[in-house]
Length: 160
Figure 1 (spheres, rainbow, N blue to C red):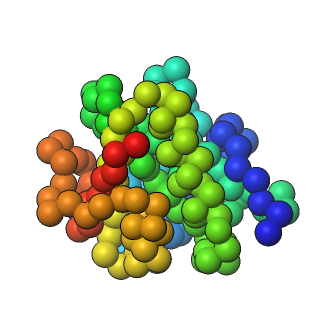
Figure 2: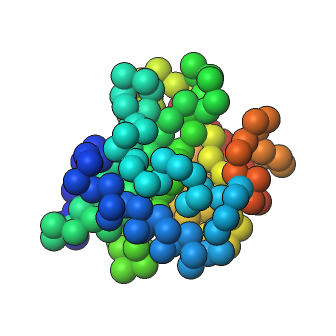
């Protein structure tokens, strides 16, 4: 697979928005309480900045955006980040793109000084959950206090 991962720039905002909205619909993540409805989805490059403890990446294959994923501070925490909006087009799944995206996010989280990473997702996203488990995330019995994605039913975290 000739894929590379780069930080998002404005030129990729529309492609990432389309992927997030399309995959969100695929899994029924529509409306309030789900990541695809967050305002940042309209222009991801404007919301993620390493100087503010966040970074969003796009996976590109043959010049096309095939997915994305990022990290950002969880609420106002200085030691906990959240793995956010990891979405891949169906044709990109099962080829290692998700693993490479998440690993890039976790590496950057460590570089930014985070000690814990949290995520929430949907139980229907079985392959994503399996990937998170393989990378060391552990299941939580409930979400972390303050979560905004109340539609999610799987919560996980890991020590970085």
